[in-house]
Length: 301
Length: 237
Image (cartoon, rainbow over all chains, first blue to last red; front, side, top):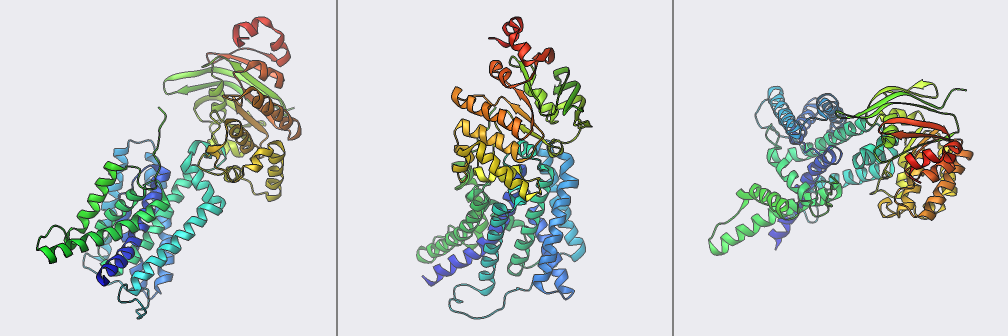
């Protein structure tokens, strides 16, 4: 029982990161209908920037704030400079551009900081507390930061004029233009926000998976799974989906281990966690492509 | 007096297909001009061309200032409120949010507040529906919201694309009555596209009749209305 609770708790903590990444993916998807395959590498690159600032003596949170802002600018630039000229290009060209971006940020990080694995300090104090047998301080921190980020984003989109304009631009670009909204800039802002969220996700997960250019590869897949489970067009759904995937992968591995212990039959275990994520992706796409919280998009032709 | 809107030799294209073949007309400040004609005559295209929503060639001046080639959102920011075909409300947003989005470009808080009150006065039903999702409104209420959204921009010209479309006659009368009030009280010029020619000629002071992308006749609304030949051959009533 204790082990089960532990698994759920650490699933929630991992889920927080998947949720952040899923949120970043959704952010770009709702406004542009594109899945940003380079999201993981962008987050990794941001995590390296945070690491570098910490090496230079900055405090983690200050470093993260600076890097989130820089990442925001990088995201805006990517949209304005690289994707804007391609706005009417076929989707395959866009996918190739995303893969190109992925490769660029990957090699750039390797070239600047090397490919050896680096330690990344946790920003949360390592204190013992009630229940610390189930969940560590860093894991609780990840969950709290994710929730805080969510609340901030929710308020931004709900209450500020700019957030409202961004939603309008995503929902109905033609009408948004007729309200005088500069839709192109809203898309760029969406990219910037996604990159900033990705920076938070990357920096929070780095202490767990350690810093290296490949660190986000599998996490991005979980992010996809989370976004798809919740509904790729629903920000709230993406977050819930991220948590679901996090808990599910741990529980399935846990049950697999249990099965092996009791019957000696090995079907699934910790080594197949990524497989679980991929199975989730395939199942959702087959059974409910719009996700748990998404709505079916009907296109008039 | 400088015309509020001057359109000169306007051509519009959908891909290779030319939809407007050189349309010329003008609209005086505070006036209501209507574009009439059969389906496919180019009425909607003319409105879309003014807001640069289709590929166009030709000169368009708003208040003497050339606006052709400007992006749609910049034309709107000059003071052109476009109530598009199909109403273009943000269906997943509440009525309140729709109105807030519409005032996004404005920085004069007091003016926005005043226009809100004005909108509520014209369409009291919207005030009662503020928290409701726009997509769940009735057709008439959606049209009222669409007009209100254009009003919240604080426009000097409104482009109205078939405000009567798909609505019950009583609702249409109500909406046209309020459009007349808006024109008189808020001093907003209107360019009205209508299938319902009889109704449009009641409201407008000037009329242009379009056929396959060309203006085939124009004149005072009252003259057009009393000309039986025109009515029979172009307006179908």
